[in-house]
Length: 308
Image (cartoon, rainbow, N blue to C red; front, side, top):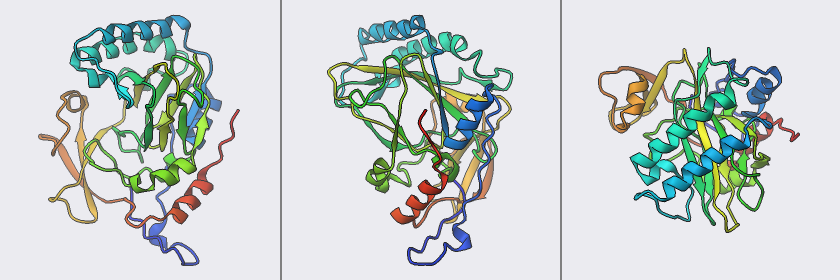
């Protein structure tokens, strides 16, 4: 998300034009200071043993009900409940929202953030996995942050497909992103990113809280059992909502940022230029000439993660 990168592989030092804009992440809604510091440094934090068996059972029961609905289908790909139709997704959101306060009231300051903005149940059948990616930002990530909570219903292992991440990548890969981009700027480096990812141990009862700019992925489910997890989107109450658009009307080195609102996200019409919203044209901070060697330098510079 921010400022063009002109990397010359054989130069002694990257020219000043490649210097990344420093991102200051301050998720003050995370109550525990140690957890907040880990999030700021790594782009994620695992909060242990805060989800009860009763909550997990409620999610599993909801998924069982969704399996009986007309829109349900089995797939070898990772799916979220929105794939099964509006009724199934609404049921999933209703259940997730109903348990959110039980999970987060002691973890997140609800005077500073909302954790009922969106979410659902994530379904991974045998063979399912998900390539390296970043999530939609919702806000300008150089002013605020969007967090996602990811909560498994079973212990995560190398066999059922755990969460993988590049720690610290939320600090250097926060270029402008939106739901409108048909492709991801780092997609061609997918295998390289996989090779530099670390598995994050998350067990039943834990919550993984991670930044929207974090580069992450999901390993393959090699078992015969469906692996369920559920997620929630967490946004700062005072943050300004934005949507980025770059099309034939946008100049080469610029991107259009629209100041939108909650009604825009819930409308379901996220393609094209938002109508009736204020537009700001910004400099495009986007990697135009990345190489694996430059990415490796960034990964090594920002990765300070040590597993507990």
